[in-house]
Image 1 (tube, one colour):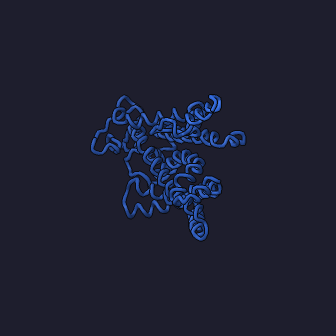
Image 2 (image 1 turned 60 degrees about the vertical axis):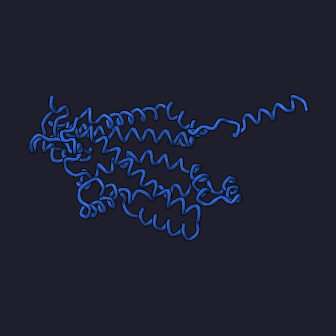
Image 3 (image 1 turned 45 degrees about the vertical axis):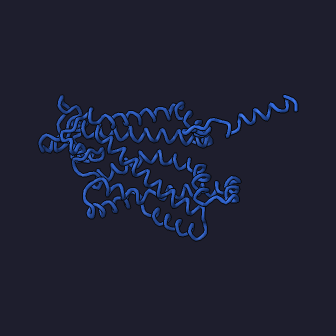
Length: 322
């Protein structure tokens, strides 16, 4: 056999997946492309910088705003109980709200609350939605009909109004705190993910590689987790990246209405709630609304910029549709 005839075989063997060094942290080409695009696009880069800034503030919160009570750092320190806010000073850089709660401390430690609320609610709603939507799409039939009717019933309720109602009920049962508001938002947030992942799985499960895996005798759980979900989950991740900011905004609305964080808890919505009695006097005390409002604005904008860029990367056709 000639040298020319053996060379392609040797090259093919060298380039085969079995011949490549196996890495524990192997990243496929699509994921590598998405990461590269996220780090080079101006919109996604701006969003990532904003989010990274909030991450640093959350991590350095004990340094930037040392807690007066280390046993309960989430409680905003306050000097006295005067109803009238005070202007920014050397002791209180952002001033105080009614009740003399320190705005600077509330904004800094409220960053940790925002990440906790946003990530937990988004993670829980996505997990429930993925489970329901995946089972409905993969098995179909009567299971699909039952699960989708449940989804439609839950979606029939106005989201924020239903969350307000459930939060008020849970608050009387389990007491004051973050849990009631978070459960309420989770209970009415998961159907969006269920419907989205169901539609994507209905398309992906018709692909040849899924048919081949089923013909080889692979279990349903393996087919769904290893072959279908990785190829159907990207649109769901786009929505999830945007929903982190949206859920923080919705939870701030619950706190503003007294159904989220307890009074005095480091939460941006709680800080704005302290300002509502002084709205006619905002020209004199703009700090009570300005600083927590800017924090919410930047946090939501950062996640929206990342999600917007992520969507355009996944489906470039959408970039020119706006």
